[in-house]
Length: 496
Ligand code: ADP
Image 1: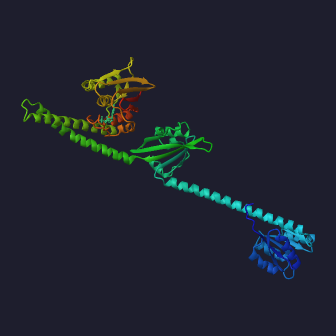
Image 2: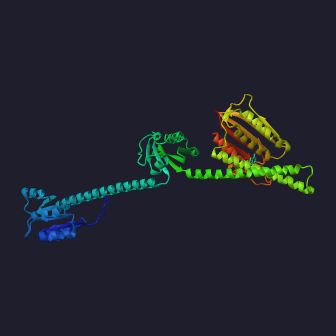
Image 3: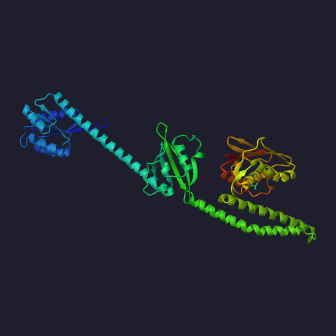
């Protein structure tokens, strides 16, 4: 038992001193703490003070007798066990005492063992009762704790600024918080319990929840577990999901966390509009300056000293690169705002690729590089795209290969189809890219600054443009590179 074994308090109420002392002696050996009272009155007074577990009560005493003391004890301390000891033991008195709530009955004179056994049984019973009460209290406390813990978690989820949606394995919504209702434009009192489809229209989001919640999503592929989508009404959300696992590791459902990107998207749009406006404003005066510089440089009666011709030439070059820069800025802001693309049309990718190679050929020839294109024997399947955007992807990659390679190297461009994708690769034997830069080259304005690249002109916008267009077409672009040996850029575009 967990009850610490302290001496058990026992009260003996008997007018016979010998009996009181005998009880005390015997019970002290049972690790009891005995208090003695010579009559009923004193006994009742000691009851409040000593709070005994067991009372040994004589029936026949001067003053108030045991039969009157017994109900008084029972009514004040019902949990106290009263054992009657009496020399006038008859069946009737025993029955009467039991009726009035006595626990047991010992006739006088009694043997020490009789007393020990009866009192021992009473103590054991009280101990068991106490232990049961303690366990019950503990169980109640644990339940209360759990309940409190649950409601605390609920409060936290409710207060989160992120949307939270928990679904069960069969695709029903088990929990959602107010932020989620707001993000999805649901009624504030919309209740969980129905299939996800009834809360979200976006198919990509429904598919993601289904893939995660059914446990079909591959483990260790978290890239695919997030999604940017719009539930409509000029709202943009980002969502990330995880599986909810049971104790045995089985998948019970999905928990989706949603963040609102609308404000960032709006800011991004404003920034794009600003860049587009500035680039647009810069473009025409720059074009005019370039035209005038060209006229001046080509004039048959050049002004001033020969040195000034060189300056004019340089000014013309710099103006041209400024115009290129402004054009790329304009391109990227249009691509990002989604206004860059003309109507998609059926395009022969082999043709677009040949034209791109053609357009870069003069730069390659200047550097005595061998630029080759390999197309499969059979015509490549056509793509539904904006031809200008597609051409921009290929031209950027091929002209980079030319720019970032030494003279007299080889650049191989090739195309083929592979499992419902069109694959175009541009492989060079150029400077290569350090592994820690491979991620960064897709960032706007990022340029690698080394001895070799220092004199190559560029804006750091070519690859971001490539990536935005390819993303827009639902494809992807990858690079492998070995510094000092060369790089291969591969574009994957979905077919049909
Ligand atoms: P830009 O060429 O105008 O600098 P890009 O966005 O096209 O901008 O490329 C970013 C950077 O990536 C380049 O500055 C260059 O350092 C590196 N890079 C791109 N293509 C290659 C390549 N084929 N070989 C080596 N480095 C490259």
